Image (cartoon, rainbow, N blue to C red; front, side, top):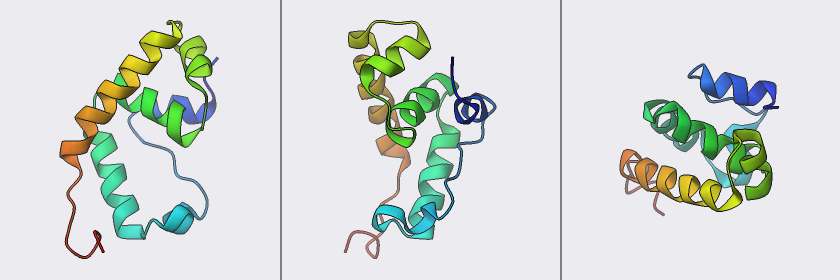
Length: 96
């Protein structure tokens, strides 16, 4: 069963972690850009990415939640990342 965070993703609002703006070296502008890009993704793409990377679930756990095989979860994750990349704008300042 998906967690409450996964339910928020389906509703269209990628969850926020407390203090996530600076977690892992991500600045608030970068975190905002990532959230904006995630919101523009299809719900299924957003869900698989949040389950895999935000909730840090294994491909097997993602597969179990979505009711698909682990290989299908890997394919969905790879395709969702491919659709996310063009939506992320890299500025000169953020690439330093």
